[in-house]
Image (cartoon, rainbow, N blue to C red; front, side):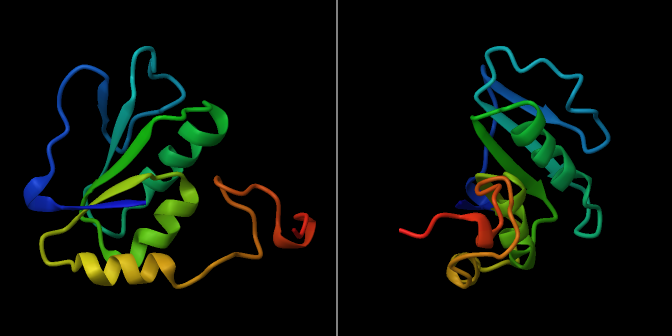
Length: 125
C-alpha cells in the first residue's frame, strides 16, 4: 500500500473518479477509470471501507483505490485488507509509523480482498 503525505496529494484528470462516501459504487461507470478516490469525512465514518470492498470484490476493479480525508495510521491495515491501494494521510499523521504498522502482521487468519481464502484453507509452499 502506498502512503502519501497530504501536502503532496493531487488526484485530478482523465481516468480519475472521485466518489462521495454516500455514493452507491455499484451504480457508477468505471469505463476508462484507472483511479478511484474515496473520501473519509471523519475517521469514524467507515462507508469508504465498504465502497472499496465493493469496487474490488463485486465490481472487479483492478486500478488504484485511494483513501483521502480524515485518514489515520490506525486505519491503514484495515484499508489495505478492504482493497485500498493508496492512502493520503491526515497532516498530523506519521508516514514512518504508518509504514511500520503495515508491516506488523505478515498474515491473517481471515480472508480479505487480497487473499480471499482463510489461512487454514491456503496451500502452504
